[in-house]
Length: 139
Image 1 (cartoon, rainbow, N blue to C red):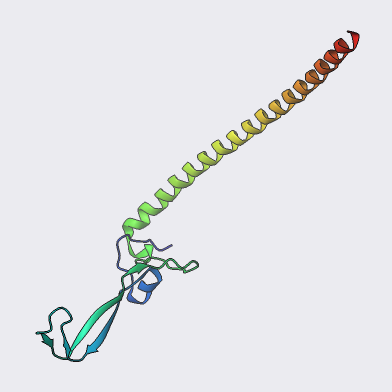
Image 2: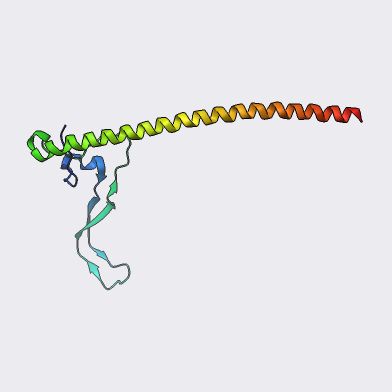
């Protein structure tokens, strides 16, 4: 599996998948008189205007992967570090998964206990209501 190296430049062909550049347009302007000072006239020139500022490309479903370095076979340091890091991550993920399963099982047991307690409470409530009705009917 090739290793990804942080901070590499994005290839020119892929840059618009991540960010749009600014859009600059050139306009040829003929002679004109300054609108704020009629004693000044400007010659024909080119006016450059930024039509759109740079912005991030937020289109969904645009697949882009940052540049990859050479194969891990090309870098002996990565060959040594990558398997050790992966093994460590796998062990850590297994522990987390086991803990999550244990928490889920405890939650299920607790919910079942609450459900059974709720049934008992409802039975006692029904008994109390029955007794209250009997007391009211005897008066």
